[in-house]
Image (cartoon, rainbow, N blue to C red):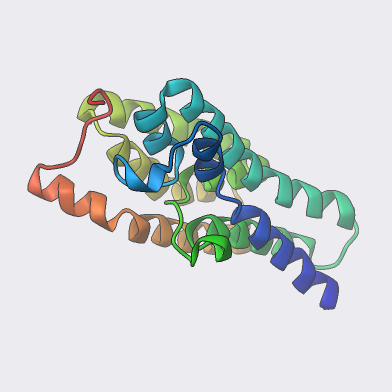
Amino acid sequence: MIMEIIYILVSYLIGAIPFGLLIGRLVGADVRLEGSGNIGATNVGRVLGKKLGIVTLFCDVAKGFLPVWGVTFLLGETAAARELLVVSCGLATVIGHMFPLYLKFKGGKGVATALGVFLFISPGSVLVSLIVFVAAVAVSGYVSVGSLSASLLIPLWLWSLGESSAILAVAFVIVLLIWFQHRSNIGRLLRGEEKGWKKG
């Protein structure tokens, strides 16, 4: 039991690493003070350029993928309740990104980190959600619409692929958290004030 708690805690701490903020500081900028104020890849790309936005995206995806991969590797195939612990670590990683201890629990929106988690758990679901994301952004012009649409539908893809109830439950929690973190975007979309991805 102690080791399981340690795995989950370490996953949270990895998820809490604010790569967007760290990358910004390397070039002398604080992304929290510009653009949307978010530390995620979209705002980094808007404020610091597409290249650093892509680097941030890669880092945020990686920090979602690596903890669940690492726990699976350490536990092996025969470990009892392995799947529940793995998905718990994935959830902890996403929560770490959204509510990082290092930044007084004010973090990002969790989409890229959740992408990394599900990329390990169910690559097929991620592929379909990426198609939804690209289509939604292309039609609407808003990254937030793509993120909300892709996240909302991923439990459906997981269910259709026969994933377990534990994975589905964690997916629903992550979706709720992502939508909660996007509440300001939803408000701007309803008011017609959201910035399109082509702007800035």
